[in-house]
Every structure is written in C-alpha cells, then in structure tokens.
Length: 141
Image (cartoon, rainbow, N blue to C red; front, side, top):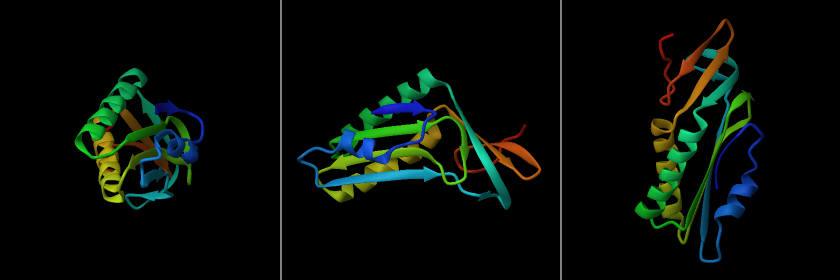
C-alpha cells in the first residue's frame, strides 16, 4: 500500500495491508501535527506533493526497504491538503518476523521519506506562514 490522500489516515488499514501469518511484529509509525514549532504556536499545516513522482519514490523506498531489511512488507500513506493540530500526516507500517527488524526498517522509511519524497509542508502560525524542510527548519521565501 503506497498512497497519497486527503482523507484521514486509518492505521488499521496499514496493519492489515502488511501483516502476514509469518510475521511476529508490525511496527507502526504515525507522524502527527503538533501545536508548536521553532518557538511559534502552529495553527495548522498544508502538505503539497508532486503526486506521480511522490508515489513512485514511495514505491521505490518500499522495495528498497524490503530488500535491505529482513521485513515482509511495508505500507506508506501520506496526507496532502490542510491538516489540523493532532491529525496524522504520515503513517508507515512494517511487518517482519521479528520486532528489531520491523523497528529499524520503519525508522529507515520515515527518515528517507523526509529526505527524498517530493512532499512539502507549509506551516501556518500566529502572525505568518513558512515552508518547512524535512529537518523541521524553515526555508527562505
């Protein structure tokens, strides 16, 4: 399961998409919108993507992770559009026979996704707005 969507993320769908009878672990990561960043009160976020390229890169990351780690399956879902405080913006599920591999692969997926997938975050805060890079820092406007 690789998907960009505007609808709320349903973690149970990701778990069902990756879990098999030979898996003893499913690691699930949810990235959520927080109410502050860089000393400012965040009001909401907007995510923008280049859909075709983003989904292609997410699929490449899924295949790479399965090959590199001893995991059975990987699912990645990222939201686009306006997200409110507390909303899940990204979800990753990794199934594996053992928990260590599942945790390690899940961390690899989120860290790599933030660096390589063409999805951009715009933060709206009290008094302004700014584009945020994958590292959580602002970009010049």
